[in-house]
Image (cartoon, rainbow, N blue to C red; front, top):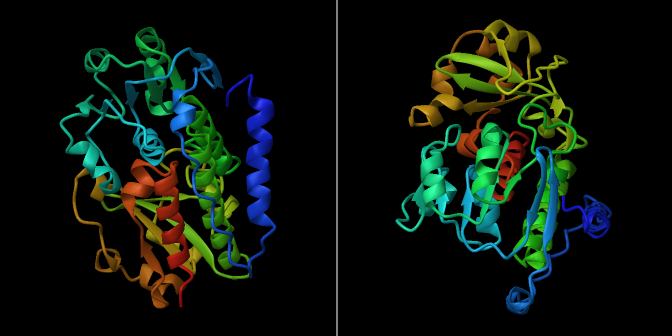
Amino acid sequence: MTSHHRYRLWPLAVLIAATVAVQGCNEKPAEPPRAATELQVGQAVFAPVVVQHQLGTTVIERAPQRVVALDMNEVDFLDQLGVPVVGMPKDFVPQFLASYKDSPSVEDLGSIVQPNLERVHGARPDLILITSLQANHFRELSEMAPTIHFDVDYRDSEARHIEVIREHLLTLGQIFGKQALARQKIMALDAKVEEARCITQDRPEKALVVLHNNGAFSSFGVQSRYGFIFNALGVKPASPMAETGLHGQPISSEFIQQANPDIIYVVDRTAVMERRPVMGAESMGNPLLRQTNAWKNHRVIFVDPQAWYVTGASPTSLKRVIDDVVRGYRD
């Protein structure tokens, strides 16, 4: 969140969220307004922007021209705002950002978890965007260019996941003179969230979110990287366990059978890490799983693992997550 503009941006975010919420579940969400022309804003004299984040305070003194994004969520934010990227890691690029992976004008900066700092320096950035995955390099990166940390919590997204995404959009919109477009994206995102809540709020089904990793499974509950599924989207959890953490709580087939979820969302990490096709129902065909309500009612949902695992905290990925969640409630 920017510091000296906090009094302007936060009420705006609240107003946008409130506007969507009061529409009600039986009304069609209002069409978001078309973005105002940004050319005049871009030509105006740049006012320094001060951004406060979990790793400190970053001052943007001039309009960035060469932006490096070290996390795929950040690449998507910039893509949504029409801001070019000069460099990014290209080890795990989701399909919806494939054009960046194939572009010779976008420098390959190594891996998401361990970016190549020499390449980052060679890209001559004037702004660097990171998340907690690159936080241990914050000091070195800040010596190269102003560096902003995206304060999304990958270990526990229950409390403010959607709000943090909104705030980051507003911050980047201010930095790049794209405020109107950022507000448009927020309204579209809020409408999507409200649509999901309208579907889940009166439904009795309980769900499990599980991560598949080479034949083993982990569960993610209300205090985990997928906590926002339950908190923000209104999905009812099938397990009372608090599976706080980045990789969830290891579980057995017996655990899944005893929880007896009505819906199971499967995030296939192996498909991402080993670049394999996403697993299907036949890969989960053990007798205990077949006894769950989810299996019997064909509500084992194999989600988009790139959107859920590689990203999960950007406008495009969140919309894809919501689409997968809604699939679990279709008859």
